Length: 108
Image 1 (tube, rainbow, N blue to C red):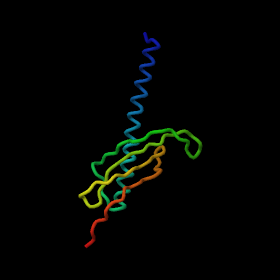
Image 2 (tube, one colour):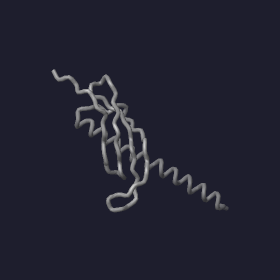
Image 3 (cartoon, rainbow, N blue to C red):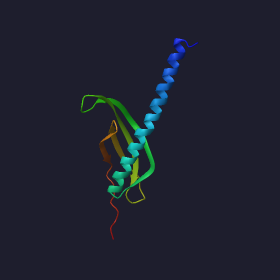
Image 4 (spheres, one colour):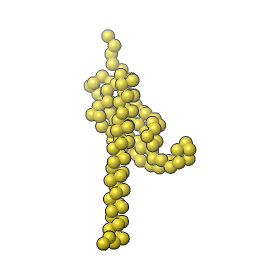
């Protein structure tokens, strides 16, 4: 028979599994947005990795609670140096993308 403690552990495990699954969806969305942004600027997204650096609740446009997630990534303009970029999502919507100042490739 389930006790209240067992039920609490089961709910906690379910919440952790749900958070882990949702995190993968948001990370994939952030990677896709960063890839598209880099392609538009003629840059290369390196390692296809997104590192979450911030996670906090905010009020959306309609006043609904949603989460803002910040991700860091690396890109290159010339292939010989890495630069940092930061992407912020509110829910699944892109809020901002910031890129570190980078060197433009030499045009010959």
